[in-house]
Length: 397
Image (cartoon, rainbow, N blue to C red; front, side, top):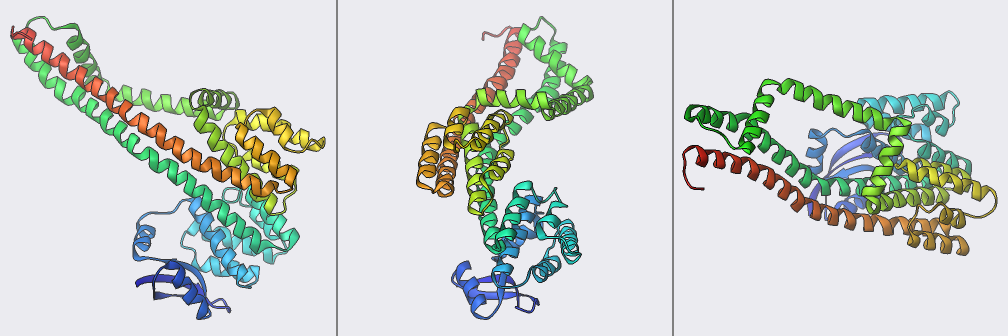
């Protein structure tokens, strides 16, 4: 048995906090429900420490908002009371102010979707349109549940990719720092020794000492040039032409990874929208917006035209030539059987799994490549110093 901390609310809207003993988190939730409470959050001590020391980002805040609002609405509480409870219990000040603004808009007569639309930094068009569809069909709690599943799956996929890249980034950082220390701290000491001993130095040693001297004398210029390069590069890729060129380059170099990632994003978004009752044309427009690669997104534009002309979705997607053949086949089967939304979710699951495998494979190849490159650079520095030492002291090498 373990101890779980919880935050729950009563049917009257009173927020309670405490601890409960249960075999696992699911059992703790069931015990709270049996006692007449609506559980908002059930977490272990370790999760509580993480929440205390690591501030959540806007995406995590959105997930928490969606999860807890879905729980409250499913329990039968009205929307305004649910939002009022959330405004009291949310810890992030900015998110709390947004929820209070939404509640104020609703009390002034706005619909929930219109109130969300006034906060585009937190709620995307996809989110707003799904909520609008839920309001129109009277199934807002069910739509929020689907949104919660969508956000959780997206977060898991993003976290999986990021965690796979942590080690290579650490390796690259430590390797670069080692080279910097050798060039700015170790080599200057050797240069003093070489100057005292005299004699001609080999060409590799001269080059290294010149680089070391430049870094010592003009480190500020090197840092400024690096910062300026990063700024100009970021500015370029945020322009329309620059973003297009950068996305074309990524497709050429990392086609397999980019295609799998964008296919999973597109299919999961489109499937979730269709399940929530959003019309196909509107769902396609929103799903296209989540595609990060502008080259692929531009190719999807023709799909909307094909749907308007009554060609369905499978044929225009095949003509666009952006999705993999397996995904296209599955979408065609889903359209023919009248289960397009379910088949799109299966495509998303398939390519998310495939993406995780591809990322692991890519990282497993990148790690030895980074080690080899760093080893060659450091080895060249050390070897250049040894050649100089042996040549000056006239020792056989």
